Image (cartoon, one colour):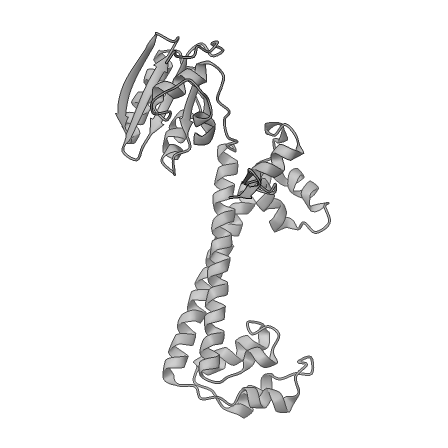
Length: 305
């Protein structure tokens, strides 16, 4: 099979085949002028890879987005080179290679020929913001799970707060749960938390409080209450760090909030995912596709996959 020749548009490039504990690197200056070396995944070796690329006047580096293994490599190299993080499917779709299309030599060849399309990678500060925002969402979800567990424990004790209160973790619900944890399950004492804004009648509210709360219930309720408090403190710390991270993007946050339905948290979440430099996306179609808002067409020959 005759090997396909591609025109060269990059003077010196490097292709990386990244694995968990091994990185294979090929620096290529032409079809016949190339060198391949192997490096382990430790930071000292990644710095040696960086120094070798700099010494060989490499300007562009290409690697596949392999799990999370590409991230430390990217972090070491991003300040000194233009890095293309490529989709494995795009590499496989280029004809002319009869063996493993994932190896560093093939990547370096495609890189020199300008046939690789890099994925969008936000700058470091946006990536850090994204980590904070995503972790905050996870902690909020964990706190919600703890609140649901409290409701289940109350149901187990036949305390029907969820039937008479629209928000069990509101002011009234919290006072009742705290009283139960403290060992005060007296109906008359709990009824003092009833007020006229509660839609349920006093009689039904009283019936909902007539349960059987054991020491085990109290212990479990306290565990979940403490867990919620811990997560709320954690969210406060994350919010403080998010405020610092978005200080220089206040104009963009305000602009996004001018869109009906988008509040501060949503605006920050959007920025954390797509950044603020829209020149990275050729048009709105590319942006919506990257954000996963464009449905895929998995149909061939009239059959859906």
